[in-house]
Length: 251
Ligand code: PGA
Image 1 (cartoon, rainbow, N blue to C red):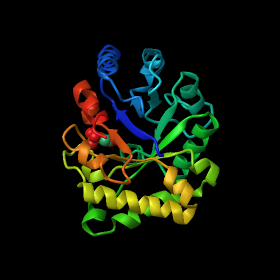
Image 2: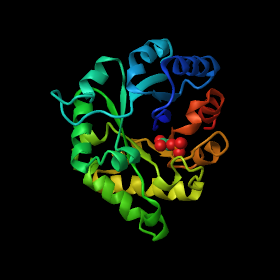
Image 3: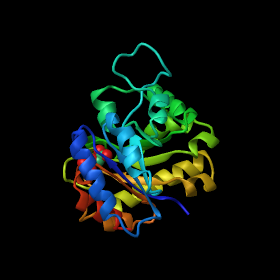
């Protein structure tokens, strides 16, 4: 049985006080979802505080939106995987399209980030997803396959099998345009098949693959009903407690 996961990527939103209020309303409204892993990815500064807020609730965890690709050193403003883990975070998002685009993160850097995250006991949530021109020209399978081959398929099986993947078509992120359930399912099945080809059926079966890109309280149910969609990585809709809770209740 694969894990069902709903992850909240807050990006660069909320102050500490606003964030605490949001986490508290999510916690108080969260009922009957113990079998669903909920991960909050706030701005990294809030991690220690949020770790203590969620500690009584085993189905909640906290993660970082990024880590640096070097273990330690003179990199002003960056945060290491070990520092993140030492604050009680359990997960880290790696390879989000916004980081690839705005911060020019390279496949080699992403691979190193994943290796460092795993060394320090963090579970990486690795994002892939095609851009609009690839979708329009029907090159979306090859674009996603390339992103997998350039980074995570370079890992040995025992490391790869610890990952969570997220399929986030770039044209759907923050745009209000969501992949249809058919588009999501066909890509998730493709990703699972690529994993089977590269590793084996058992690994392919047990890896959780999340959908992200304008997933919200209205469309989550039909997306989560897809056989190969194991949950969501939610941006905008995770900033409102009722919406996030409704998404959690959409399995
Ligand atoms: P969105 O963002 O839900 O606001 O589209 C998703 C993401 O970037 O993870």
